[in-house]
Structures are given as C-alpha cells and as structure tokens.
Image 1 (spheres, rainbow, N blue to C red):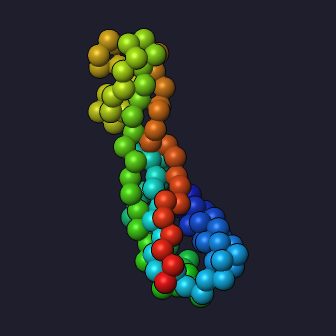
Image 2 (cartoon, rainbow, N blue to C red):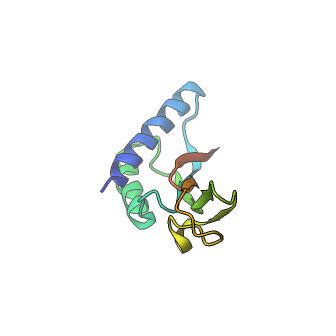
Length: 114
C-alpha cells in the first residue's frame, strides 16, 4: 500500500509549508492524482484519517481529492484519446506508437488555511 507513503510525504510537506507561513491550522488540502497512477482513493482517504490523527497540526484538516483523467497521445496521427477506454493502441489509426500524456501524476493542488 503506497498510499500511506504518499500521505506521509504530503503531511510532511504541509507541516513545512505551515511553519514557513506561520500557520497553525489548515481548513483543507486537495490532492490531484492520475487515473492510472495506481492510487486507490479509498485507501488514500483511510490513510489520511489514520495519519492525520497522529499529527496535531493536520488533525482537523479536511482531505479532498480530484482524479486527473488519463490521456494518451498518438505520435502517428497526432491525436489524443482516453487511455482507460483504449489502452496503448490508438483508436483512430491503430498505431501503438503512443505515450501517456497525463494521468500518472500526483500533486498537492490546493491548500486552504484555517
């Protein structure tokens, strides 16, 4: 379960941001992660609840997330398409000369101070 590692990293980053900006609490944090990142939203939320309880500065921070759709680019026909629907083979030209354009990343999208 790499979700706990992600939560640990994010909370460490939030604590640093809070200290640098003299914040004592955060209202919410929003993470965004890709549809094919391998992150399970339910596991991530459960890990957040568990780890936040152990971190007084973050304990009452609301956890939100958004999923970035996976989009693949075809080098052959220069079009994009839904990775989840079609995989690595371009639905327009049948080429396998494709690469993932978005959908594998994870970012802290927004932090709202309390």
